[in-house]
Length: 303
Ligand SMILES: C[S@@+](CC[C@H](N)C(=O)[O-])C[C@H]1O[C@@H](n2cnc3c(N)ncnc32)[C@H](O)[C@@H]1O
Image (cartoon, rainbow, N blue to C red; front, top):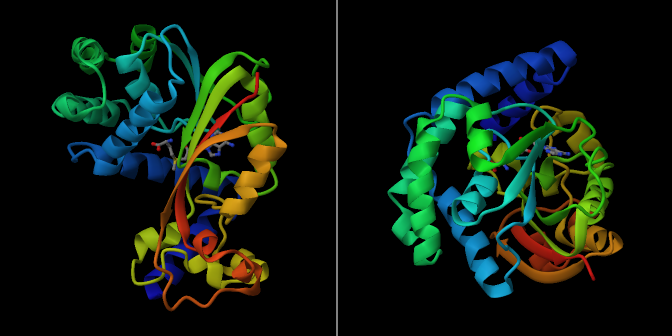
């Protein structure tokens, strides 16, 4: 618990003003790049790739020639690159700030090369990936990477896809992003997905609903934040630099529904919350909603 509180205080201090936030981003980007270089590709990234491809086998949402939008693409462009290795698509990659890291990205893609046999693609797709990866490893800049892969990188500070044209994308994807969107903007962003999708297009989102302070201190519950009222959370634990919105499963479902999207597939991971005393705010949730730590949603915009 001591580590949990210490990290919360440090992150709150970094959230004090625009200068401390800038300092945080600089430090986080440098430390992140260093910690990721020459490190093993975390299995969760490989699993994410296969989850996406397996769902595509089942529902057939990706086609050659499609236009893809990856929201919150981060430092690695993971989903966009995995899709592009197997499909001939054009992609737009957007984020609210620039945290790209070319060396670490190339390092992870080089490791993926050695794991292609285990990736859920057919022979033609995997041959395509085998041809493309050496070219990715050889690029010297992001511009070169984007020319090679037909990517466009967009910084959209609005965080609500306000600058994108309506009904232009066949597939919208995000991973570990929606939990970081401010509580008051979440519905606008989900409506943004619906706006930019073509009728019949699909939207796939993985949301990590764990307490992100838990990643620094695994002696607490994975959903420790559910112990706190809004007031206590805001005052002592919430911060702007690693913000999480504490939105739960039924609220996400309601937002996608309100945005006019139809649920195609939902996959949840549950945690054992044994010993965690819940704040009244969370007591009305069903048990499997309280315990849900991760969800993968696949939605479709009606024709
Ligand atoms: C935990 S990182 C995940 C990055 C990447 N998807 C991955 O898994 O490697 C969250 C990312 O979401 C971005 N983000 C947060 N709010 C956003 C918004 N409203 N629109 C787009 N990106 C956002 C952050 O800047 C950050 O790059």
